[in-house]
Length: 187
Image (cartoon, rainbow, N blue to C red; front, side, top):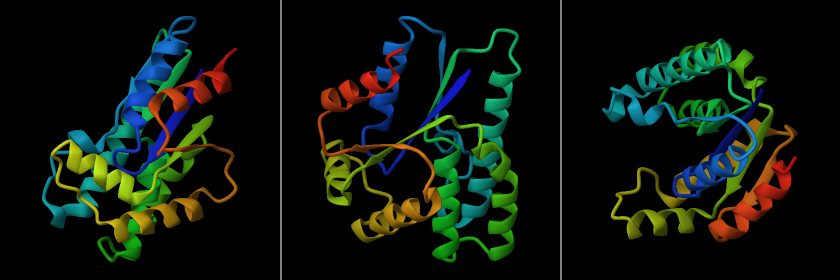
């Protein structure tokens, strides 16, 4: 079983590419998409950042463990905003003072061992202006400003460090990106 995670800022094309890659791989293999935990988080108040992250971390780990212990595990688990993405946001919220150092250390301790479960990380690097523009086109009020998205991108570089990954330019068309991914995962 291989675990592929897609990471990137809002409207970088993650969900669309996850679906396209799943369709491509499912022609030959059994594929399950593990969707982002934050979307289902019951804590929507911006003042509950720590509780949001705790809920997201544990729901994602729980979902992953269910898939791994299944009687018929899939060949691929594709994570749309997975464990690495959560780790990046934990770092960001700590730097912004939205979680305490103690909360930060606890969250890193809990998620740390599960980061190595990810076999392939796909990081979609998208200019913040493109992300915000796409959100406005869809009538979405952006959660983060351009400067905040730039901070998140810089933190992503730091957190990922030398971790092997596939980097895609999120300003390119989905068809171009899909073609690159299919070549990467063509077996």
